[in-house]
Image (tube, rainbow, N blue to C red; front, side, top):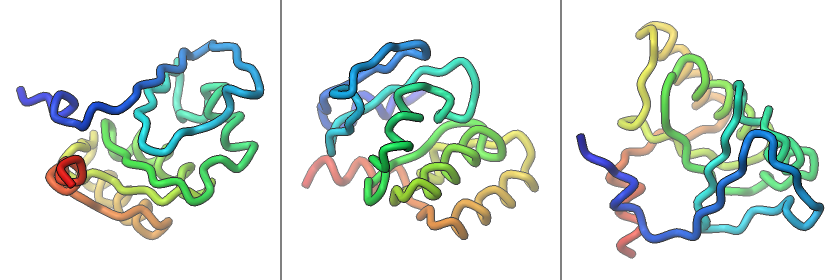
Length: 130
């Protein structure tokens, strides 16, 4: 199995635990950094750090890359939330998988209608070589 993460540019990585406590200074996003947000349920905005960022408008104009499983459940709600909070979302079409084909296709239409743009893994990886 190919691990694309190993090929990503070396980005500064931040990990936010599901029950992390934070200070006001922690509620920020640095462009170009890699964020891992742990959670015990979905959507990702159930994580207190993500919720605080959204409440402060930190996603407006942000470029977000989304991928994962399941297209028709978790990916769908998180992409729709990112779009709702003003992020420009690039959804990596060949790095998502759904549970149900029909529901996944419906979710893709819904996400693109909300503003998400479908891209490929190669497009994303190619950015790191520029």
